[in-house]
Amino acid sequence: MKNRGLLILTLALSFGAGLSQGRTSAAQSLAPDFSLTDLWGKKLDLASFRGKVVLLNFWATWCGPCRTEIPLFIDLQNKYRNRGLQIVGVSLDDDAKPVRDYYRQLKMNYPVAVGDAGLAERYGGILGLPVSLVIGCDGRIHARHTGIADVSLIEQEIAHLLQGEGCRQRSPGN
Amino acid sequence: MKQVCSRGFLSLTTLVISFSCLLLVGATTGFSAGEAGTPGPSLIQPDELVSILKSAGGPKPLLIQVGFNVLYVQAHIPGSEFIGPGLNPDAIRRLHERVEALPRTQPIVLYCGCCPWNECPNIKPAFRELDAMGFKNVKLLFIAHNFGEDWVKKDYPVAKGK
Image 1 (spheres, helix red, strand yellow):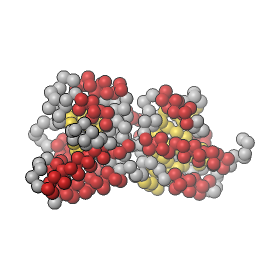
Image 2 (cartoon, helix red, strand yellow):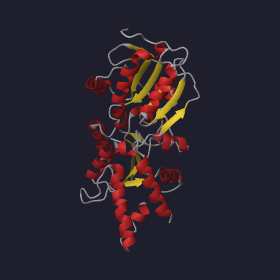
Image 3 (cartoon, helix red, strand yellow):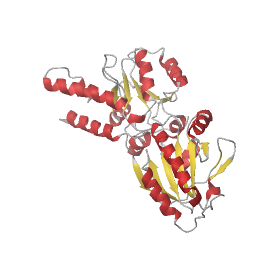
Image 4 (cartoon, helix red, strand yellow):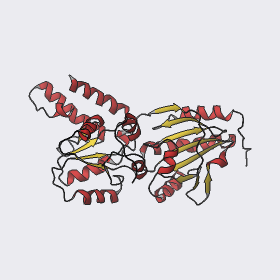
């Protein structure tokens, strides 16, 4: 009987394993600032995006769920760029080369840098991929999505935050 | 599940359950149970491994993490060794070199936890290497979601650092 229960549990876990682990509402703590160098040698400071909604995505090129999300994030960046969204990617690949190759291949349209364990720990630990954080114009973390994200939910969160005070919109053509 | 699978083929019920086990293991790891005419790898649940690690006596398995380095540095099972992502041929070479001199009966537990079980690209190549080398006592730690959710948040033993 016990074994049968274990079998059923394992089945349930297996079928659920490919799904998102879900969203947690963060305590709206300030997103830790960081300063990295992006894939192309440019400085990437989180603080420089204050006044915009930031979607901070931890990912890796070899991570299947991450690769599923990236094209959707590219679309989101296109759709909301002029309304003040900035997506930032932090790859946890061991090496920048495959990240650069993937960036070119996908024609990614937002900055990406390679992160490390120190940065991951400052964000509460990135102990599985992908992880996406929605950061408001005030620099506070509004939501944390672990596992493959429900991008429509993220879009709703972004659209809501963009209406908040303190968001600076970018005029078309800038 | 392992116990059910190892009871033998004494009745039709047992036969059906055993076959289901083989299919299940294949489905959850991306391995096909009958693909090489042999069953797929054995799984070990996190709580079962914790019990083994906490037990006073008995041999302990060699624990090998085949996930990414940033994950290992943040949190890993105490005593486990970092080999590198199993999808990386260099990591597979390091794995080969690490276990080459060991008896083929050596208990080994492979784990990753980078991503949801069905999406993990690392554990399958690592298992295949050990299987090809003739290791008969290899288990894969079943991490349903990721190492954070299924190990760290459950307050199982964790070590940090390189």
